[in-house]
Length: 373
Image 1: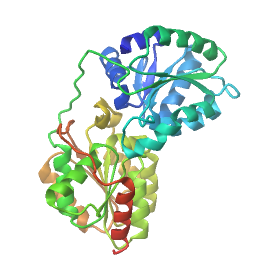
Image 2 (image 1 turned 90 degrees about the horizontal axis):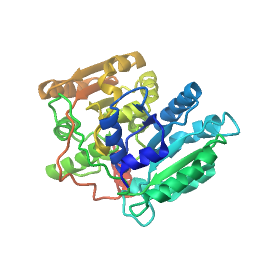
Image 3 (image 1 turned 90 degrees about the vertical axis):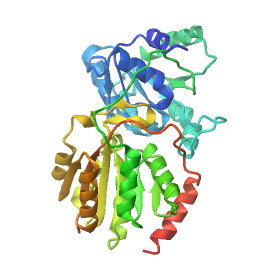
């Protein structure tokens, strides 16, 4: 169905969420219609954050907000749904729009398989009535379901539209770009060149795919890398766990701005523990680029200042390859926790592949290599 029709049927004037490729039509519609406007559309740090923001909107206006997300974000909303929105607590009505990655019977990436299986079950467990919209769902069916949902919302309960692959369409093209010049895949090649045989933990999305392809192009083993294909925002914490237990080995973390933003508290834990053997590289294009390019707030944040305030003893920002190579080499030799923010353009090559090893194979190969260090 046309996303404009879905928005019209729901009838809300406030949307907040975390971008998802399955919801690209909705995301592009919101950016084209509102951009980033605190009165109508806010892209949040994580799904729990936008759920709480939606609650504040309802408290201030008495109206029903809409929260959008990929189904992987259901875990982040369980606490605010159960202890804030639920009708046994504050009874705050909210409409959720959830992209259904890993729907049973539909091929998807390994990190989405189990989440796809339990998507509707989790909604049921949270007492959120749901309705799945597919390619063949008619406007009339959605209108009828929304009429039913209004009765549920009036009782202070929550509802959800679960969006199947290809269910929504939007004709307007929206282009996302920034003024940075370095390309992420080239940045990763430079990190690989300096890190040599040091272990790398990489974040979810295209960064891990580009790291995998860089190893292929170099004729190198994939055993050096742990590809965090899911659990967005947690790669630096995984790296911390590795670094603490391999104190004599340099460990690298390739992170993204959207991932850092999603669970920024991990930087405080990193800074407090100060593992001297960890280099935390954040590739910042100020965008959720893997799922379409919608902006993050990281273009407005002094991320180096945040790192220093969290206790990183060394933190810098670079914007060209000469600076990058200098700082990577310096971090390789320093005996202290290092933070390197790398300003990056938006975009990736169209023929970018995906890892050909399974997640379990990746884990086993990485652990076998780590055991030798």
